[in-house]
Image (cartoon, rainbow, N blue to C red; front, side):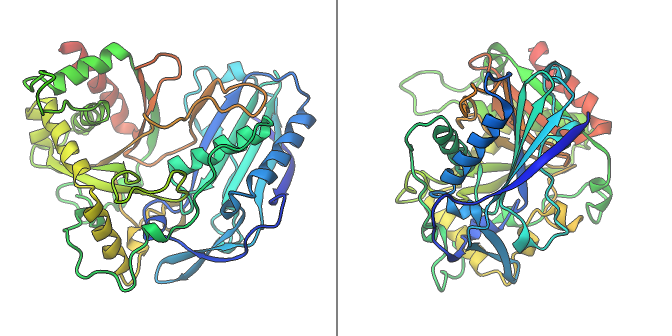
Length: 452
């Protein structure tokens, strides 16, 4: 696919905004601190392309007034820590066109071609020169549109990014603002000095298990990966939930709470991956679970909290236990991990991070440092849920998208659960695994459902 860049714009806030350095919370500075890509595809618009790009530029400049943090730049301040400088340097908006047609994308399975539709972030450039938000509007030969964007995870998590996108779209449609961002991050930062020692043992900050007999993950990181998008119908999801909850009380008066869709599906993915990788029974394996703490801290975070408020906790088991026991066992391990995230746990984890002399080892910076940072590939996996996020219906004035999904992600063990846009209750799993394991995984993923 040939994509021609027609123009690149620096879009700055439409009005003067706050300037100066802003301290980030500990949660902004760990995990993925690089940019995270997403992509939207739209049917052809009646409006001419120059009108579309003009409106997009204008609405983005107005959106960057309340969301002025996204117009700033990050700075390293030593000890693996970052600060955000509010300097209105702006976001990048790229105009492009392609001779391809929407029909060429089939079912929009993420592919390496997406790299041509999403702005590239050059991490060889000093961090303080990199935009936090880069957007590419591509017009196809058929008149169809793609909107590819990549946004710094050091500034926002998924919920915050979607809040920004929704508000930008509202402005683009000419509608009044909805929820303004809550920008004060002090409420998610540790005290000064932090409490010592932390109240809990935070296993999630250690390195996950290695393959038996291995001293590091270097070899596994180098192996070729591939991506699959697997769909489960509403009936298949319900079948898995029934399998997970088999033997648990279904009496509505009971205090026993059935396993959720996320717990069930993630447990099923975890077991299927262990099968596909042919782990020995004694192989330890970790599952990273991303938990939104907004309603788990006390008091709850204000609506519109704009920043990272998600914690990665881990469920750990052995492949033999996961595969020899029913699906409910895997779901129970995931629930245990999720239920550790209480107000006290969040505060303790924040103190733990504040006490660290350097945060580098907690940063998943594949793009920057290659083999450093935690690795949730073989024998581990990470499953992020977008099941409850308002990811669909983004209309900038030319109609709602016909497809929305993750951009390219090529790290073994990365996976994402999305609600299907076409059938209520059905789910899509976007997963990246080593190419050598993918076909076996697909078979295992559907086999258990068919056999039960």
